[in-house]
Length: 427
Ligand code: BJ8
Picture 1 (cartoon, helix red, strand yellow):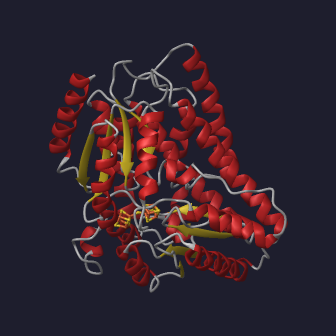
Picture 2 (tube, rainbow, N blue to C red; picture 1 turned 90 degrees about the vertical axis):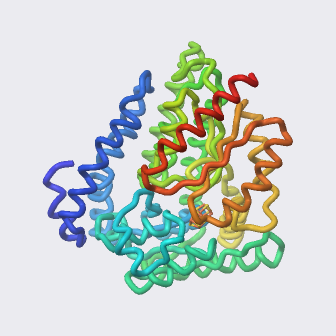
């Protein structure tokens, strides 16, 4: 990233010294995790570029958008309906953080025994090193886990936050509540942007977002191929970038990559040894630059063939019905799509366990590695039911609980290698 961005960062209120420190760490880490892989698809160069410019070019686009009167809205969860942000002429950016930043500062506000995703999200804000959050006119929160709910109260003292009440069950009363929450967000966005969300703008936004999710679905479908045509690390990077890139450009680039991969599949070209164990990763989201577990798994000789994560299938597996008439029906369609997502904060949540079993079968997975962030109650508790369902289907299961530090990397690698050895002996 060039020095030209420094003025822009300064104007956004970024702490340049702390930010310099962050920028020193990320490129070597990226090189180690991504660029060291052999036989990567040529079209990954676009996603490498987006990452290299993640605090540069994309931020410049946000600033230009705001200068033209547009709004930027930050989200922390897959339940935040990005179609509404788009329809209000806004840009939606995902803000969940995946690295330990300013932990001591964050602990002045939050207890130490809290999920690292929340601590890190606050750490980025406190350390003033995230140009995305500093570009936001509004942040959208939602009542998912207790940690996030209470975090939004603290964040609300620093920046405007709109919290959506997400029900925890999926009955008719819950659907009614959620549909009304979607409408409350419409009002807030209209007020902020000064732009009416009407049938035409909402339909257009739904089409754009569906096209993005469809591109990710097409890519996912190709990952059933054997040998695998793309590594799990590269697929994860694409899923992470989906939350920040311009949606039409992103969809085009995913479709182009997909075409390249299709050719590879036809020629039987893979990115891994055909005998490499195929892993389905499941659990908590992995926000940039949280690549620790897939990196360990893939450098231990396996390949991740699918992610049942919010940076994975939970984000793109469903589409909004776009062809019905009337703004109210379209709003219901948007609300209903989000209520389909099966995050572990819902109860009961059997659909998620069944979905994981189905994904393992569809992707011919040799094992499921379940990833729980330390102190994440919903995902660590739900692991019990998922483990039973997965093992009952005859697929081995490994539970890994970790945080954003590198301190446990060696220990995790040992457990993953033992698991892979066990899978290989079984095969
Ligand atoms: S839809 S997974 S993005 S809530 S890891 S903060 S659950 S304690 S991130 Fe999530 Fe939305 Fe669900 Fe997805 Fe809490 Fe767990 Fe932390 Fe979590």
